Image (cartoon, rainbow, N blue to C red; front, side, top):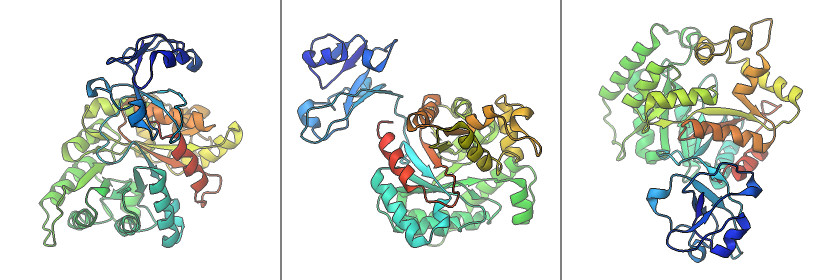
Length: 389
């Protein structure tokens, strides 16, 4: 059965349910209009509207807040009960439930990038994740975006340990933390062999061991400037079990990239319940299968040949036939696993799959047929669609 707070017995009839209002709320046997066939006991009603005091929507014992049913109503209006079930809310460690992962801001003049960041903040996203490859220097980019906003978090997704020494990395980390506190999160990773050796002229030997040594150097590094008053925040780009475990031991947790929900499930099992698990999920609002998969394959071509990603997908049961090669594109199964395409409802279902699998935060990367486009219209739609998550 479902239990709701904020409605009386008469209102419960609107859910095809019966019950008595009181300290324990209203019990409802089923929700036919939502097609719920096997309701769970103890669902909690939580209202996101403005008149919470009138409808007592927040008067819910914290011990029962393990499932949520969300209703929406405009200020001053009678609640329009549209209840949906969501997953248990994990500690997001300040990242918020849903963030935006994007390279699109690098492709705009910084003045326009800051305008976009301010709108993302107003839309309610918890964090903006910015990459490091051959675009803007990530610490400078994060500093400018943080200075141009007031509340939203900004994170590197990720800063490569091969792009700078450990001493330089920790100096940038502490500098931005001192200036912006917990709004800044450093995502750090081993990147990829071709980036380390060809771009940064480094040695890509035993990346796990190199990461451990790098973190040791960071944590022992001298920093003679004004120290942060809050603990600097760090997550690791992690795919395999060893790096995932390290991310929990030496930081807040993990930021996996280019992963399906089944990886999130495995990662949560490795991490345990406490640490951050913030996977990236690529999405595309395109309902035509041919067009959607064409756009998705172009996006995936950048990544799927890289050994780190390919080996991770093989661990999850995808085959070489799924991965494709220079002559054969990735299979439809592989494309559909990595890129959530279709209607907004279908896209949101994939984000929810990550939460169901154990994610504490999902960073959504919106794809567009025009790779240089700033996907502000899609971000606005996404913000409205993810408010209940």
